[in-house]
Image (cartoon, rainbow, N blue to C red):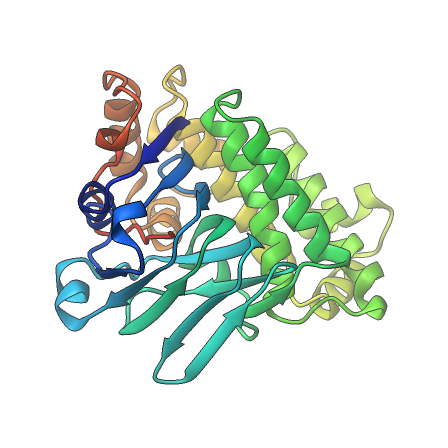
Length: 325
């Protein structure tokens, strides 16, 4: 995992840094007094930012910006700690206050008011939300699952550079799962038991990939249920055993592929994860946007890349990243 800090007090320097991530047009209320302090934790899958920005600015995503970098592969979950944000597009204005979060896309024209604020920005692959459907773009983080997700985000940031990429991704996976439940409105008290049941199944699959028979009848028997009970309960919780098993198998495979010490071939990784080689390549690319071979090659190159000095120059241009702030 990469971790670095930025401390910028010049609007031109900030604009250049910001636009190296996602092109936007910027307007600053008091450019002569501009200042931002930001920390960045990132892997190839997730990114977590925290910033302290005393001044106001407005950012515009224009058609020319979108043509230069579509930003279509990610959502940003913006979590204000201080300050009220606003995002305006063709559908209207969305306002986000402390105690809330917003799931925002930057692949379309929009105007963002980013006030003097302290906030977190959590970059999540769209595939995470596509599986459950994005129904509620503004989330309540004041209680229940929302409070848990917000707390995990703060704790993850507090670890700074202490986590490996695999540990960072594992925590981000859990945060993303909670946010997905929130976006589909699956937070009512009557859903608590079903949510806990689905998580129990998910944990069992996660712990036994490559070490046990994970077909549904065997998994149900190991958990003390009948196959019909397990299938029905997961359906009521909004998922299926096949989806749970595939999700966890792909995550396990990703962890193996990004570990530079893993000597297993692509075929062996597929077999350990419970896939045939052909289906593994197809499913992995659908989930992560590249084949297992492409993913491993890129992660290996990144693992031997010299560490960049802290500062603005550590921001790496990417057509798939979004920008907050």
